Image (cartoon, rainbow over all chains, first blue to last red; front, side, top):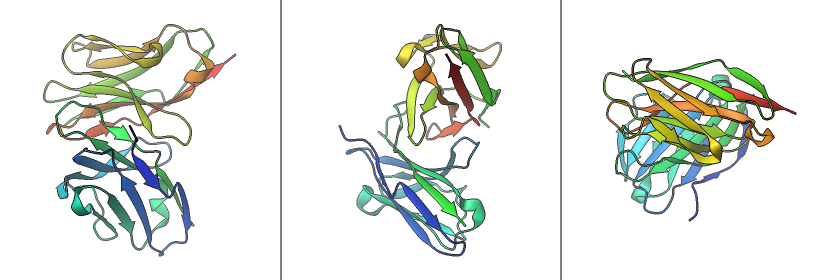
Amino acid sequence: EAGVAQSPRYKIIEKRQSVAFWCNPISGHATLYWYQQILGQGPKLLIQFQNNGVVDDSQLPKDRFSAERLKGVDSTLKIQPAKLEDSAVYLCASRLTVMNTEAFFGQGTRLTVV
Amino acid sequence: AQSVTQLGSHVSVSEGALVLLRCNYSSSVPPYLFWYVQYPNQGLQLLLKYTSAATLVKGINGFEAEFKKSETSFHLTKPSAHMSDAAEYFCAVLNQAGTALIFGKGTTLSVSS
């Protein structure tokens, strides 16, 4: 079974530029998450999708971050414009909709804003 | 609100020694608790989970954790550390809605020969 795929693995941009990350979840997983992991901290939930609808985006900085999940499969997370404090690893995870089942994580995209 | 606190950002042990990583939780409802491991430049991998069945939970790679309600703890242990156990370990709790994980800040485990 293929895992959660993310691209790119690494990205370096200048502040005020825009950037986009892509995630392909495990086939059949209706729930998709984007987490932000700042160096030295645990992952923090940014947004959760159930199929192509948003369940929770309360911690997403909506003035600069946006995310979509078209057709309930792949998802993209965009930052525009980026700030220095956005430097982090962005993790995508997916899960079956049944409660208590495991969430599977991708390898993440490491973003450096200079 | 649900939260977890990991005590000790860095733990160092010798190969063959006991591994003990501490996690305390705060929850307004019976918690579902998890331990994840993250190797360098990798995503998170589930080690084990507590879902209100047995209080002693066995996971992969010889790890286990015990749920203690009276102490609000869910500490991770392994009897004998291997060099390959060196990684970042995260304790997590399911949020109150049961829809997403809330993570602790993580503990880095170093293993020396």
